Image (cartoon, rainbow, N blue to C red):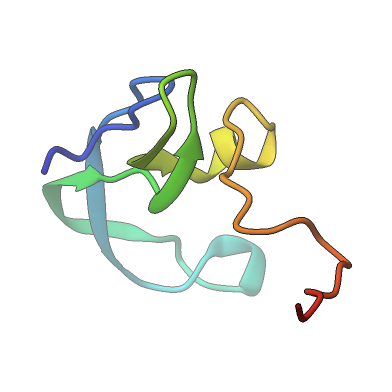
Length: 87
């Protein structure tokens, strides 16, 4: 399974993690000193949801921004606020 959104294609990024010591100047200290820099990766927040497509319902890994912006339609299991009738 790839760490990529199936709708927008958002993938992982990279950046630095800093290790620091000292007290900030605005708090009365001498200033912060960087003691180490480590390369790290940032991963998107992917959720595995059932998506309504033209072919039918499929399970996909979608980032939360696509879900919140309604770029993808979640599959409806049943109509909301209905009561099933007994025959």
